Length: 444
Image 1 (tube, one colour):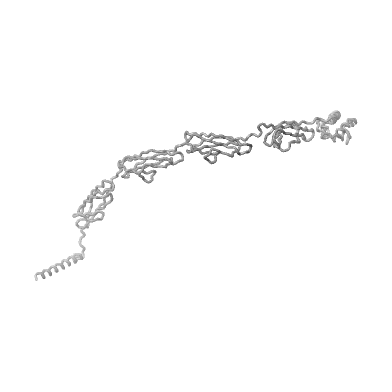
Image 2: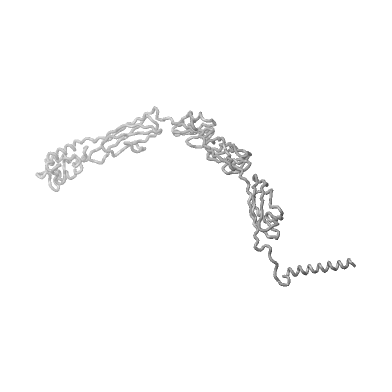
């Protein structure tokens, strides 16, 4: 019976508590909310930090305290709350620590832990040796080493990939930067300049050779055999700037000037000039030139003639007058009185020269008699000063040119006799007639 009463009392008490709690949550009959325990409360978090002792280490810590309440617990980066404000074993990074007081009011603070700089005060020194490339090649090298720092160096050339070795090969002339990095990532660099080496500086390539001249004019059976000394050996040769070849022999050459260039294994060159000459087909040959001259007849168009007879060479011959073009004919016509140079050239191009002089033929006796008749009877009115009718009989060629007029006036009296005093004696007129009948030339 006692047990039943106790049970009933517990039940009544429990219901009463529930109803009391319900009434409290609903405002207790007055519908007013309970007071906010965090109203007007500011929770502040402050603390001290200890950075990690080395990059990557997790031995940093944050120790915080809080104000604005009591009974604080603490959480880092949203983790579980703990009674202590000390957070050890932290690496570098950003952290947020939240403090919560006994009433559940919270506040937070931000803290940053940083790794120490392993390169502070560290100097990495890069040194090295260089091998310069030969000109036009990429056979230079840089061998670098480093000191300072933590050791365990790797090396980079011109910002390239780091490698364990400090040796860089197959380099051309130029400027290069080698960077060394130690185990802590601390770096140092140095610049090295590679200069192309001229392998031909101070080197003299000497070219010598023997020649074989062509056997005849125009033949191409000459040759040059060249050799070279000096330099690195391994010579190749070219002729007149042509393609290089292993042999120094050049065949099938005609007469002319040739340049042979020798080049050694390093590209150093030397040259020499060679001359091939064809045999002279005129050596010991004398071309003779004989000239037959027909003199000029005055008072006519130039009519002198030179006829050439050559000898001493190989026919056929061609002929030239006063350095003009050669012609097949050995006769030069229509020549005025003068001295001419005549050349004969044989089939091999051998030449000989000789001079020929064309003179005027002398006057004929009939012309001389007529001139005397005119001087005695007509020149007083027909001379350089007085030239009646435009005639001047002191000029020989005027007499030849106007012979028909002389006959008409002095022999025939047509249209009037000359001289004006009357016809000359018959014997004088006959001299004119005889000359004209003979041809009326200067040479008649």
